[in-house]
Image 1 (cartoon, one colour):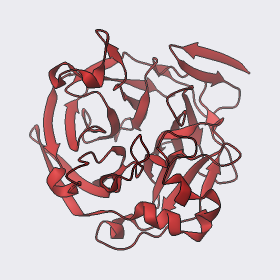
Image 2 (cartoon, one colour):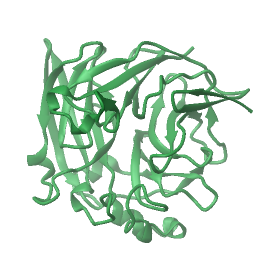
Image 3 (cartoon, rainbow, N blue to C red):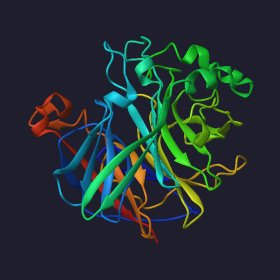
Image 4 (cartoon, one colour):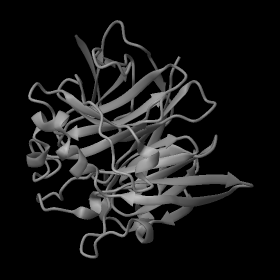
Length: 328
């Protein structure tokens, strides 16, 4: 297999893949570094989460300044001594956007209940103004439901949930997407199976969950991503395919872009010719009505800017990168 290496990004070049693509320019957006989840809210605007705070920020593509920010502390109600919810996934389901936190421990393996949230928002754009409404109540028991599910017992998630998210066998959810039949799929960055496969787990009743109903956990799916975990997953209705950005379970290793049919018996295929420009991609999304572009957002908290980690800079100097891929 021939491999193409680009600024730390490794993408395999194979035959028989589902799509090929070209990247456009990398654009930088101001006001935050750790972009971790995103969704389109109009043909030219997107909303993005920062896993270092509990605010959602709106940007117009191609323009660096924040259009509007929506703090969610009052809605998410994090613990006073652990205010970070660690939002890692987003997806549109009907006219709402669902958001998922990591549900992991902190980097030292300590329990962080503030990171146990599944919630939904409705975002509207009218006359250039953006409004956001929170829906229902944040659901706090996804991790407990996953641990208790008999069909997941073999993955020993109870033990995983005591380990740091990026530790060997730790617990870390970073992917979230809606299915064509209105379920949610959770994509695990960690843990992998004993054969090095990534886990995808359905939530069968998301619309009821945000109204306080217990989550119904579906049957897990194991997918081969060359011992990578899932950083982002999004369904493309135009092609009836899931696009997956996969990367290391920790911070050492390569990224790759895949397509997947969603069928448990079929493994994903690496997309040939992809160029993500060396980005640390943690979010991908599609724009309704745009049949040719996949948009990618980079978590740049560890990126060096003027010799310092981006997340250590004053917020006015922080920025993250994004690009789009043209898909034939």
